[in-house]
Length: 63
Image (tube, rainbow, N blue to C red):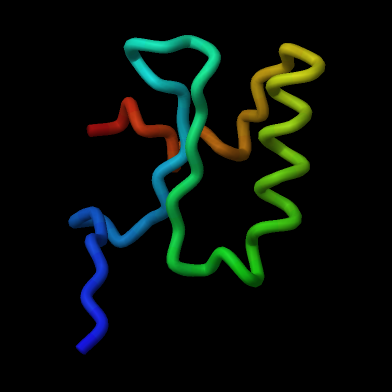
């Protein structure tokens, strides 16, 4: 049996570590389909320092 930990709202969790500012993570069940776009959005945030508003509903600080 395959078990997965899923947040109560069922949405991906995307965000920066509250302890280490240079650590970011993306956790999603749709990694194959969303992986390329999430990677591009996260790369833009890291390299350009721009906050991508489209990611706001999925940020880890929503908990």
